[in-house]
Amino acid sequence: MKLSNYRAWIVLAIDVYLIFTCNILVFLPNYLSGDIQMFNLVMHIILLNVCVFFFQLRFKTYDSLWRYAESREYLVLLGGAGCGYLVYTAINLVLDTNSIWIVRGLFGMLLALMAMLTLRFVYRLYRFRFTRYSGAGRSQVAIIGTGTAGVSLLHELVHNSNGHYIPYCLFDDAEDKIGKSVFGVPVKGPIDRLPELLADTNVTEIILAIPTLSPERRAEVLKVCAKTNCRLHILDDPLMQLERPNASLAGSMRQVRIEDLLGRPAVRLDNPRISTFLRDKTILVTGGGGSIGSELCRQIAQYGPKRLIVLDIAENSVYDLQQDLIHRFGSKLDLVIEIGSVRDYNKIDRLFAYYRPNLVFHAAAHKHVPLMEHCPEEAIKNNVFGTYHTALAAQKYHVEKFVLISTDKAVNPTNIMGATKYLCEQVLQGLRERGQTEFAAVRFGNVLGSNGSVIPLFQKQIAYGGPVTITDKRIVRYFMTIPEAVSLVLEAGSLAHSGEVFVLDMGQPVHILDLAENLIRLSGYTPYVDIKIKEVGLRPGEKLYEELLTKNANLSRTENEKIFVEQRQPLPYDQLSAWLNALSEALEQGARSHIFEILHQLVPTFKDPEEVNRQAEEQVRQQMGEGSQQQETDYNAIGA
Image (cartoon, rainbow, N blue to C red):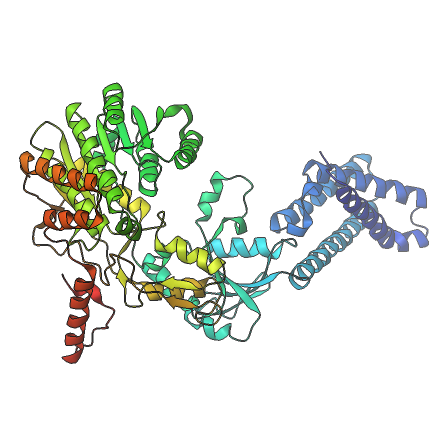
């Protein structure tokens, strides 16, 4: 029995007063007729109060916050009153008192209960009206979904007088719900009519509260929301809140992410083979502080490696990763952080000699296309020679498997970064037959949310108020999420045997202009009005189109339908040595024109981006001249 604050004492005092008053009114005719005396009346009312409030306190009726009260609280109130009256009746029967006390006491108790319930309903109604209409500085919000998640969120918003949102209406496709109301908030109509029904309202925010939507339907709903000028939020799975005690649903809302717009389910590459592949192994991840490298470390840590070694030259990003892994896994993970560069062969050799890793995931690389066009020598040092140093040490110290993180830009490259990553793949082909280490490379396209990628840039530009900059309105790109990319890497490592290049089926392409417009709309702004979109021209080394990695005659499907494998011919080690010597001499000379010349010699498919883009434009013009209905932006169908 605990009354935690003065409000509970006030409510208790009011209830005592109501029982006294109601019973006085009920017994008043008997008192006036002389059937009962005032002393006996007061003693019986005191006895009734004692019996009733013993059970009310026992049931903790007054520990509830009545502004949030639901049926359970009212049932507890009724239960306490009923039990109290039954005890009061039993005492009267034992004392053999006049039946008038039992009968009139029942009517008095019922009248008091009606008064108590009415008081609580009035209070709740006042709180609801106050919460809903005293919304200075608060945003009116529409909620999509009237399922468990949507109703739970609505309940929280309706009863939170200090929140940021005032619920205006709900939307749902279920016809039997349209026209009804939940907690006094109307269900307006189907989701597809959302822009029409919100057109002349003060709604500025939309919350998508259907966690079970398929990716395809979610993309459709987001496109509907993009036709409004409202800011969109997405409610994550409420079940995840069970892991965070006292967390609110409103606090779990997030902004729209580009993977929500992809319209395809995330690629799941969970395979029991991966657990066998990683468990109880000493694993080295180079470039572990980067976007891909850090996610690799997180996923590897879940499989119980014997030791995880993280190597990176960027100390700040590695420190953040270290703290994250310690928080997640604590002493269960044997974690080692090493600061160093893959350019330094002596450092790499010492690390391999000391730790003797079983598996190596090589994610260290320079990946920024325009910057590497400006600094080609750095791309060669870090990408080509860094890969060579690490792969050579892996072979020397009998590493079981070495997995290289490659890129789609290695296919018919038009930039320095792509050309150097192609040479990284060739380094593995040149070393694969000189030892027992099994080498493999993994190619994928643009990774959502990675450092330097377009999505974080767009989001920052929107936050700054614009303009959002795109290089060319015709550009089409394929995207995947970081967890998808890392799952592919782990799957490839488990499948690798000798020199394979693994490729992921990346689904449908995304038009960069559409992506920018949708992100602006879903952030609550109007493209070209509130936030400008500025076309700044292609960056150095950039293609208009992006080739489908899976459109290759040499590819074959693996046991996973989303993963393809390209078998490559070994490269004679003497030829690899000659290539590396040529690159080393070009670096010593320092002339960038000579570096470009050597790269074009070593990479037969390395073409100037201007030439490739001219060919693409010409093919599109020819198709349109022949009456093709294909849009000009559909460059993904054009091969180099």
